[in-house]
Length: 185
Image (tube, rainbow, N blue to C red; front, side, top):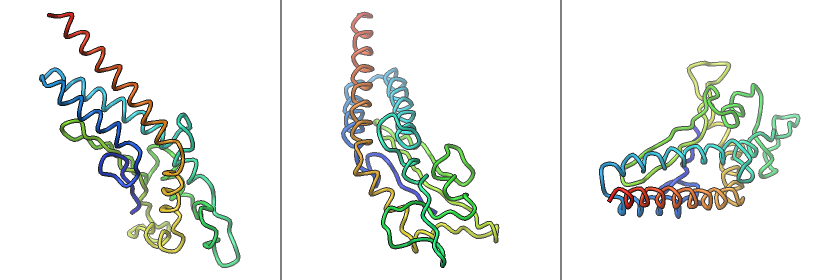
């Protein structure tokens, strides 16, 4: 199984400042009603993270990186050229990584207390020749395409742009919430 986590304790960095900001906002908004505001902010963050993983709003996405197909050679696929794409025979693996809600794809939203959130992304396809076997580990050991794709993603401005957008949204949400609280008094 291939998976990577985007978030405060994840392997893909770039969201730490936004997550820290949400945690600090949680401390400032201590009422039960603020829990709804925090859940709302997490929902917004999840949608924006999904756009960063599968879309192009913030820059090059993981889906764009893994949609490249590794060139085929006589003995299989090119394994030497770093970052050359996903090895594709049946397309199960590539589809699982580039299409939201595809069979064998992993995109789990993880909520924690005190504003923690992360997203787990990856793939766990079944071998077309043996439905009882998963084959990702064998492919990754040979080609290292997933780890190369994650490295490439981290070097993009995608996560930085996402972080800036989340910071703006969180700030706006808290400002509106505090304004509503002040008007009630």
